[in-house]
Length: 449
Image (tube, rainbow, N blue to C red; front, side, top):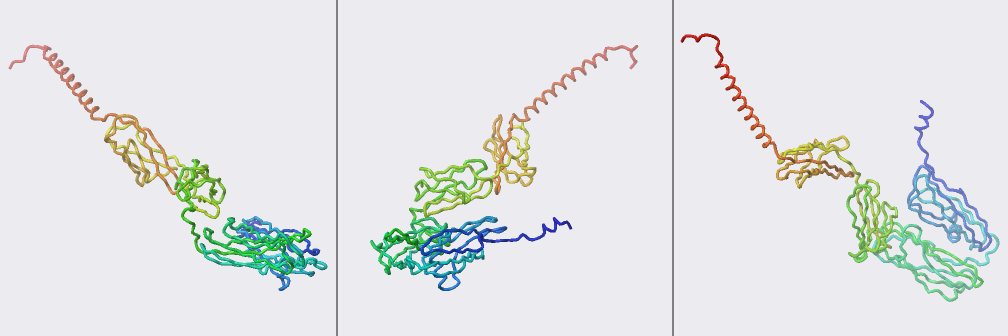
């Protein structure tokens, strides 16, 4: 056995790795740095990758979750032999010490050790500190839920310009299903807190896992910025319902031939929906015009999905693009009026069964051998176009042929009969003349009777 064959039989190694393989930071109090890690999927694909920070001890766990932020915290897919970078921000807002732990990538089953050392004495103590770092919520679709948490000013200084806002982690990008409310104090005094209320409304939100981070910001009176974050990890069950007047409807042909123009029409509550994003097989194709229509060249032959998306409302529909197949029609070019027109149809070298054959309003269908019989009775003299068509699972068969109908053969038969009678008459006349000729000949005396 050759070395090449032996190597080809060896299994392909599946490898998930992270670079760098470890992270270590040494910061001065209140210093901020940025970094990144990259997750590689070699000879495999990854899905539902969640990022979590876990400390080696209780103190390290609390401090790392306060000091280290990762973006994104969730990725739905990393393709085979692909990679994804995760950005890090480290803020030394905890007391002096060394804090160790792991950054875990859930479905990848791999971790990166991380160590953050805060040097010296912390000038601003702990900064902004929420009383909860992560909310893990499971709730049904079409429901509303309220959550609240407190944000403490443990910086030892008076703070101004407090704010709380949200951003997505690439899971669901509608901004209106989570609302944040709070009363921002003009001056955020030390050791006081602000209550932040978060309202989650899952009406119209697709089922599945979604994440949103509430980012907290404030500033000291001398202009130093403080930041913290609270993660909302939300799993929605069931099917989201959308109010009738907000629902999208897609009008698209169930099947079209390849290389043709695909016209997609979208309505909302029965009226044309302009500005709706259209995706074909999850690839952005464009947006609808004022009439709610987007026209594009049909994708390659196959089964495809078109999705219409407007904010939190989505609708999908499938359609087929059929491969064009020209057929061969075996039929006489000139036939008798009123006769049975017989022929056969072949596609790609094989008889085509179940094809529709049409000519002059007459219709027939091919049998299992590709043969057909079409009755031409009632059709007048002249030239006709005979067409053949059939829709397969993913094929569009078609073809045409010219057929000429002429007066029938009874007229020709009468003409032949008339010619035959004339020949007989001429022959009889000639026979009589010959007989008279022989009767006048004399070959000697008459024979006695």
